[in-house]
Length: 195
Image 1 (spheres, rainbow, N blue to C red):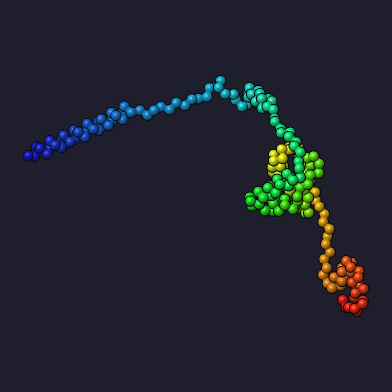
Image 2 (tube, rainbow, N blue to C red):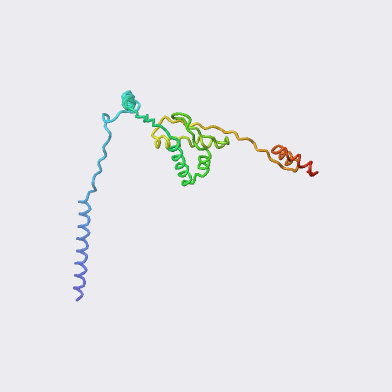
């Protein structure tokens, strides 16, 4: 009986040796795929420091400059009604985008048509003028495409406002009222009123 287990262990060891031998032969048979890297040939490219590269760059510049640039020269007539409606729409769009400051400035400075393609904007402060000037490129693009007039010009004018007189004390109030209505002096004297 002792011979049976020993034979089994010998067969087991032989089987293990066979499997190890088959694995090593499989490893030897396996070869990873070779990666082919193409090296740039000297004739396929041009060095950026050579005279040929300068010629190629000049040829490319000539080709790109020969392309025609199409500029829209449309110049339809502008009406005040159409301009005002586009202005309101643009102001509303600015409000919706959260740009409330520029929207308020646009609302205060209603555009007026001065000539065939000249639009005047008025503002009361120099800060407002600066802000409107910053907005001009976007405004110009919007208006020129909507009006189909690419020759419009936008001019911003600083409007001076009359300084109001502020009345603070009783005497100043009385003098102000006399300026407005001189008959108040007569009333004061007639009823012997104090200031």
